[in-house]
Image (cartoon, rainbow, N blue to C red):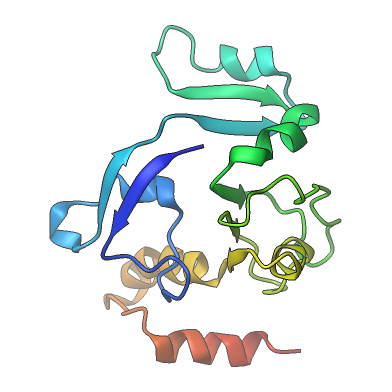
Length: 171
């Protein structure tokens, strides 16, 4: 769980969907600030055990605490943000198999997957009345440096660009 206060950021309707953890690395000039501290970050991994995750950062102080995947359901009861950072739910992949019932009604569910834009995870979260953020904003902002390097032009991520990409993604 996290104790944070986001200033100048509308996580629910912004076209620049940012994972909250990324906000703390933005400079003051961005106009977006992260106030507060992350009290605990929970990382779940199906392939690594809790000990293996812990061993990845030997001798480095960290607020990140590893948990086994089997512990994820019980830990969601006080989570404020759930982020799917995997390919699960992407076209051609199985859905992320996680029970959202333990999440509090104020939780936000963010899925970085953008094809399909409406993943089973986001559909389940919306059915519960939870706020959701899709992965299209991440895709658009990730593309900016590559586009700039290839074409020498820094593209702006705008509502019009989002609409253009949405039309292209439509079946």
